[in-house]
Length: 410
Image 1 (cartoon, one colour):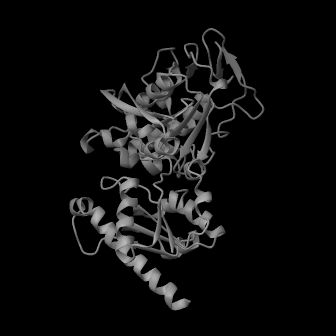
Image 2 (spheres, rainbow, N blue to C red):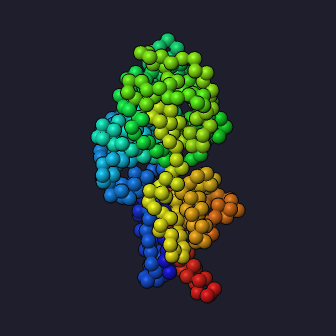
Image 3 (tube, helix red, strand yellow):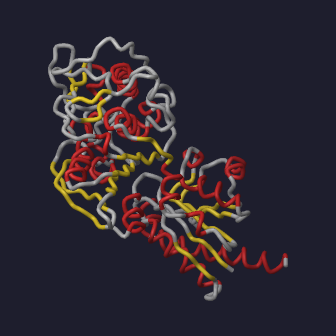
């Protein structure tokens, strides 16, 4: 019997690699002769950096940057073995985990630290960047990361604004005159872990800002700001980007040295793209400021890890994540695994810490079976601490059942 163990992280309990290892221990308790393959994965959120460095046989680079509130920290990005591709995980510098619950500031937090990592990678010679945008602390639409690369956001009087969600509504002009990089010579893929548009009821502010500390009133302010930025930063279809100062800059930007005005801006062109609202709109910012392409994080990671090639001869796939809920159905890792497994008629079992998704919806997604690994009532602290052991035991039971079922049905 051949089993593929391919898990996402269990946040605050296990990395993806540790989760796969725990599953393997449980499976070997059933039968040491079972053929096991471990493939840690991610969907563009936290853990993406680890997966891509391992897959590319790359290395880590640590550089000074800042956290979501501007405090100095050191954060990592990855570089492939050939040095051409950089892997930047937004959460490394701009993640919510950098802030204590009482520090969460939805209006002030930004992604400047992520832009600093991108700048460092470009200065080191990277010609391709894969940007994973999950786990952000901000709703700044990527203005922070853009500011770190030379953009300035100006109010109606021409004064520079601090790049953050609270100032999005005040942006009247976008100055690109200090951008030094030629983004036409850089390929940037954004690995999105959600499919939210930039603004609106299903957008970045309404769906995700509350968990970043936003009050209902602040959610409305942020949503209005996202709409305003879209109006200022989106060109109508057919407008050809204009090179300014050697950089690939969309022609709808106002530039003090070479202004472009009156282009008949049509809001909603890029902001409505699924995934534009990922990471508080940082995915949108990467598109319009850096010329990036949005990709499903799941599809991109499965492509880069050559997932389909590993399915030949597999009898069972066991996957997992910390929480299996409605968001799992929206472009997350398990859905992508199920989609590919279906082509090979391989059953997929998901193990998780918390199981809140609708059973019929999970079946429609392609899961054969899903279960929480918690065997008894316990506190969150207990569940996190005991996670590896609980996952090992859960894997034992599902592999044991699968083995017995296969024997009976022969």
